[in-house]
Picture 1 (cartoon, rainbow, N blue to C red):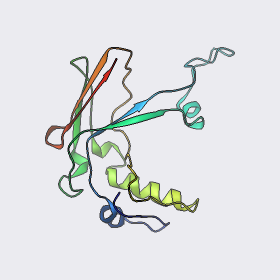
Picture 2 (spheres, helix red, strand yellow):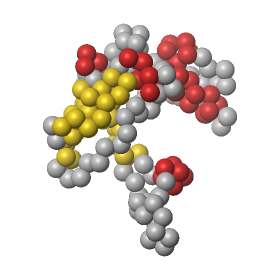
Picture 3 (cartoon, rainbow, N blue to C red):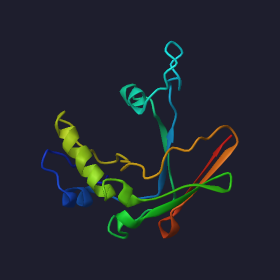
Length: 155
């Protein structure tokens, strides 16, 4: 972000004005919890991970930088490959019908805690693909077409 933005009345136009650029990206997830609770045998749910704030391990940004209005972000899509085979596809519209709207939601939610989005912060709008398992030696290539690409190798 290039400028601060916040408050309970933040609009889409406010978010657009505060955005420095948009870029292709992939979030790296890593959970600290076991998939199956050893005591109960129950499979953990997404709520277990969220409540522990244990999913985000990092992000990888592609090298491309675009003005926020250079693309209709609802139509930015990705073909995600694992070890050369297609694994997932999706469109930006999978994020509240418009990735900008998720940032509006975030800013409004942060306002409830007297917080705001600050300059220099990198904001992920949300994923439009499901998580892809990446054991050691996995190579990920996310092709966002004209928007750019992201490559990750898990050694």
